[in-house]
Image 1 (tube, rainbow, N blue to C red):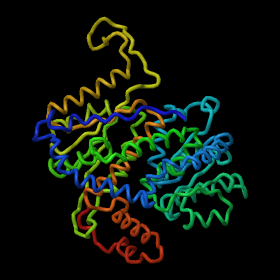
Image 2 (image 1 turned 90 degrees about the vertical axis):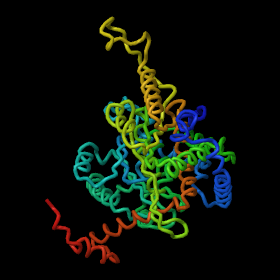
Image 3 (image 1 turned 180 degrees about the vertical axis):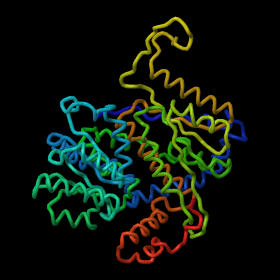
Length: 468
């Protein structure tokens, strides 16, 4: 288990000192929020002590993580591929972990070079993807993980049923030895199937929703199967949880970030939050964060039932790629965005750009210039260009891309999201709008109790008049 220094939070370019009062936030505006922030902080701590915020306790489940490592080692030693069926929070965190912690292009390595299985996250119902995955794997040498808290996730169960048939055809009655369910510990379809068919199960805490579940077996068991250091991941999350216990907003990174983004949203008319990663290893982090942020905070009603239709919209960008596309919009388009940069201090195997030409200047780089150094220059140049245009930004600087740093990042994001929900006076743990989509899907599939939605799906709303 390895530990890294803390994530560095640079919020200079959010403050009026660099942007002026029109575009920046003054310390006085943060101070005006402090009574509300202290109340939020104390309220969350009280709920945690009462066991009502179980996602904050996950970093301390070390014994469970050690058991998962043992089980994961067995899978890694026996199988060539691990296929995970899940969607949303059951897939995005794991995909982020894979992109960050597995070697680039490892799936193209030989089995001997990989020293372990390949991971495939099947998170959609696209038949083209299913067919391609079927052609890539051999069922006899594949371990399948099904992730659904309720066991009723339509997309996940459809994919599972398709590949279950392939598995049964290949291995016969011992198919159950190549499957694990990650689901509710007490109820649901998967819990029932596991008991009837002798399938191994791992539990999701009943109080932890999918988008907060990356530090449960949802993320940890597949990660353990791939040989990732999940103990360091939890250690990083513990470090951030401890740091965010501080009641002073200026000493609590999640609380301070929540306050600053809230002020930009409410007072500066900037409802779009851009997350721009300057690391290919972290390029899937925004997708995980966006589900967390959007599904938690996009709400029609506040806690009193008043209609408010609130929420800040997340937007992804990747550096340095998007300097050549989206940055023109960010720099000179509508002043409605705050940019969160994510950078890395140290790259594990940096490469020197060789000096092969004396001219022309486009081909000349400083002596011993590395690719990592150039990526940092690109980020810093973008930060300064935004500042000059009066466009706010902040920087989360990771010491390196590691399990410990990712644990810090995950816990920070989750806690900041909940704190922001408190500032909005909404429930950051439900998703009533998404539930409506599920009702229409169930209706279209002919499930009992959803006849009203089936009738509407079959043409009750007459939308043919405006189709070209």
